Image (cartoon, rainbow, N blue to C red; front, side):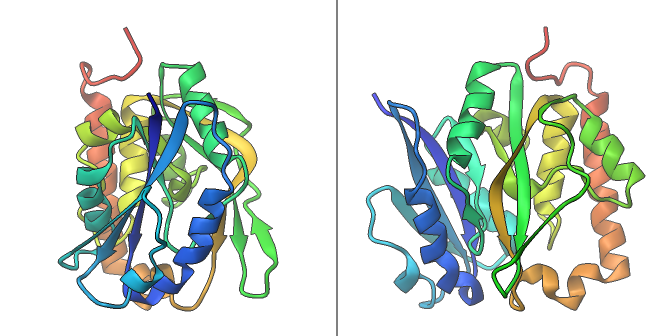
Length: 252
């Protein structure tokens, strides 16, 4: 019987033309015998602009829904995710060779871990790449460590939520992605860290495309009032979860 990783991608019309690159990076993944991936693509909206870019592959499930931003689209995609593990892949990003296998190995070899992340390189429009200079060392990340770092570094985590790989049951138990206009992936990362240990792989696992049309380039993303509200609710959720003594994954 084939075991499965469900790769979840939220996409809106302006980013749809990047889907073929994301698909190519998925097809280049090498997984252990008995494992395969499922790509669950959810359009944030109901247009005719995305479907033409969705590859013809039986491993792909494409859905549409009312606009609600990426967090809503990803959470809707969970309804069609059948894998034991969930991997995030933004529509405009690309996995590096071996990324899925490394994530899978981290969590299958250490069942007490709930999630994994990896190093990211920003892919600039000219084709060059830039890395983050404060990556943690490869290895386990203790429960609560991401929240502590995030609070001490102006709401910036030491690991990137766009690389999340997590146990499907744990993602479901936490309610999926937060219903926020942005930072919904950070909200899930901090919630996962509040209740379970994670893993960081120092080998690059994602090329994070920088381009003018990406949502994080919009002025609204850094609007002071909205950003403060997003950070407040993300922090409150993680703090409450961390304080629930019976809410732990992988601990006796």
